[in-house]
Image 1: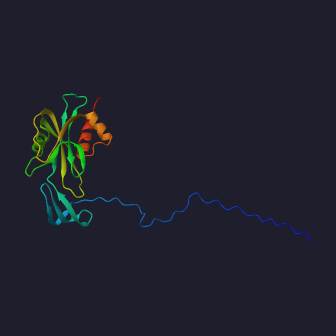
Image 2 (image 1 turned 180 degrees about the vertical axis):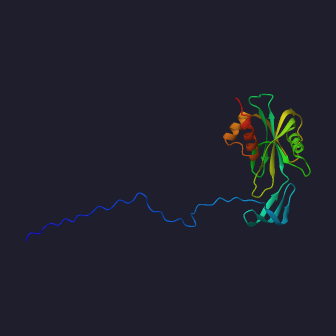
Length: 221
C-alpha cells in the first residue's frame, strides 16, 4: 500500500503591528504637574543652641511654602563684605586682581582668595569693605560699587556674601588681626583665570567674583 506524503502548509504568522499597545501609566510614572510655590516661610519657635564669637546656631520649628513643617538647624551670621580690588592703571588690557594667600584651618590648606570679612553689627556694607581691604592688604580704593551677592550655603547658613568692586587703588600699610598671617599678591586677570581653569583656586567667593568680573572685562592678552 502506498503511503502518500502529507505536507502540512503552515501559514506564516501575521507581522506584529509597528504600533505596540502601551500599558497605561501608573501613578508612579504619570507626568509631573509643575508646582508653583508662593508665600513665605514662618518661624514657629527658635532656640539658641550655640553662641560663638562670629556666628551663632539656632534650632527652628518652621512652616514653609507647599505645606512643609520641619525642624531647621541654622548657622546665623551677619554677612560678609568681599572685595574685588582691581588695578586697571598698570595694564588696562590685563588688569591686576588683588589676591591674598593664607592658611585656612577648616580647609586644612593655604587658599588664594579675595579679601573679605564679616560685616560688624550696625556697620554698612561699603564702609565694611573699606575697613577689611585696608586691614588685610593695606590698599585703599577711591571708587566702590556693588558687583553681586550670593548665599554660600543657603540650606543651613544665613551668611550673604556681598562682592564689592574696588577701583582706583592706592597702597598703604596693612594692619591684620593678631591671628591673621596674610600674603598679598597683585595678579594679572589672565593669570587668575588660568589658575581657576587649572583647578588651583578653591575659594567660592573668589571664583564667583573673578568670573563675574571677567564676563564683562575679559583680559585682552
